[in-house]
Image 1: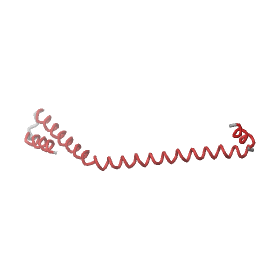
Image 2 (image 1 turned 180 degrees about the horizontal axis):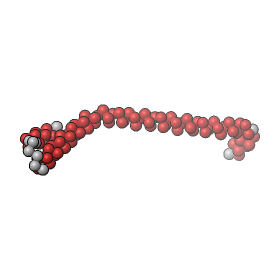
Image 3 (image 1 turned 90 degrees about the vertical axis):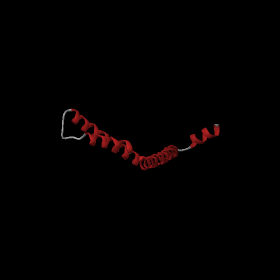
Length: 99
């Protein structure tokens, strides 16, 4: 241990500064590589999840739209609108339940 302490004491200030900056650059590079690797991994996971679940999300949105349209038609019918047909409400609900 004493030899190492003497080694650093005998170095010039220029060599000590280059050593410290070199160490900081090395640490920064290592952390940057880890961060880039993590970002690529998260990006790949997100892409896989998007490809896997996109059809399910699309189907859920279509179900939601059909059910919402049926609900609005039913409200209009209950409010006394004679121009709407209850059979259309039933058809939309059947479509929603079959998807």
